[in-house]
Image 1: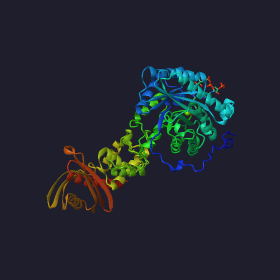
Image 2: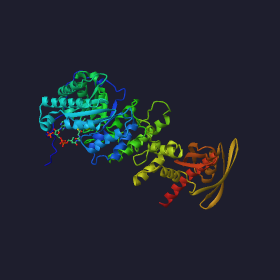
Image 3: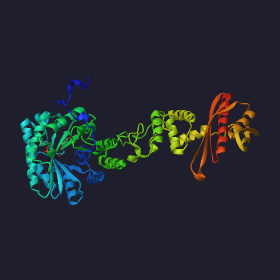
Image 4: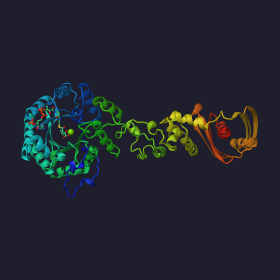
Length: 556
Ligand SMILES: CC(=O)SCCNC(=O)CCNC(=O)[C@H](O)C(C)(C)COP(=O)(O)OP(=O)(O)OC[C@H]1O[C@@H](n2cnc3c(N)ncnc32)[C@H](O)[C@@H]1OP(=O)(O)O
Ligand SMILES: CC(C)C(=O)C(=O)O
Ligand SMILES: [Mg+2]
């Protein structure tokens, strides 16, 4: 008998919203960002941040360009109080950044919160109380009127205390905590009661922050709740509509995105999504989502490794290697068809033209990643990936028939031993296709080119030195003629390619040849400083591969 029983649960809320508008809208600009790393993020840590960690996190948030930063709950704990004091007294708050602090709708806490903020130039005071039926009934033991009065009283206290510090530019923020589980009409009613006290104007708006304190439904329901609120609240022009989503169902980012369609102006979240339970909305992910749609996110995410390092140090939570946009493995493909498509697209992607590379929704270089890690080879990989790695690391552009054969060799190796790195792929290429130490060794050759080519090749075969003679149109044809006369084999050239790698005096030639020897196709390759020598040696590589196969058959 287990307690796993879905009948314990009821479906989440449904909002009646005929003619909802948000599904037809698109997001065209970034929201106002507000970080709650130092408050919601911090309160969810096993070990809350030390002073040094808070300072590091603060510096990072400012550096990224986040302009509204909730720095703590100063009335709740001495470290939070002290941190706020340090920010103010040490002049740490840049002119374009506003600190925000959280407080419950309780008099003593509100008084202390304002004390903590004395001498600040500007600040957002964020007061909240919970509004859902279960919180009303079971936590606060109050009915709808009672909770509305609690909220209004909190607003009055905030207004009263703010008046004691007239030199400060205050912004008031209210959150109906547990908004997503609150009846939508009642959420509007409570916020109206708060606004009636604060009397915001278009010039001095207040912030109404609608939280998915616990994510209880799919993101479309949240969007309905936001649109419902935005279209029913009075004085919409006097408030900044903010959302604060949590990730209980894994939809915090999606919910925030849809909320923007539904009328939200501002989004609260944390870097990389740390926060209560499964976390807060991840600012980095949402910002990168916008970026990848061609929208300026308004925060600088060009150095994500720095974000990962600092957030990891401050939270002691490791980043998942497949975390959206910036996880370690996000721009790495192991699977063959992905590698093939990525390689093809990268080779055609023009500089300055709109990015369109299959499987890479953005250019990895934008977030400080190089192409080095884009393709890594294991047993799931195919010829495209192997070829891509060799081209990237060694500049070798293998012909397709050689890619196919090499990929099989690499795959066999990776089935035995896991990932195969670029150096090993190159070694396998040389070991299998550049065969200059086989049964037949080329000792030297002379070529007379006079319209018609005549070759004289000295070889050692089974310990015996011989000189072969042949002629034809081109060095390869002459050599094939020489070998055919000597061996009696029927040899034809199916394909031949050559390429230069490197430049200037360091340049080398690589030759790839596919022969048909007595009906059997065999590939060979060679690398030399000279193009003709590379092609001659490539033919011997192929001949050696045939000879080696024959020797093995004899042994068997
Ligand atoms: C969704 C969120 O993240 S909300 C933010 C939550 N963050 C935190 O709680 C971290 C900081 N908080 C704290 O350190 C403590 O809660 C303190 C210091 C603020 C208060 O501590 P305490 O006074 O010991 O009480 P505690 O937190 O248990 O408070 C519960 C009481 O406050 C009331 N309360 C809780 N929230 C609120 C609120 N927003 N407004 C008014 N009253 C509230 C409860 O109904 C309860 O009342 P009761 O004592 O009459 O039953
Ligand atoms: C304080 C509020 C906004 C909160 O963190 C929540 O509801 O999740
Ligand atoms: Mg929260």
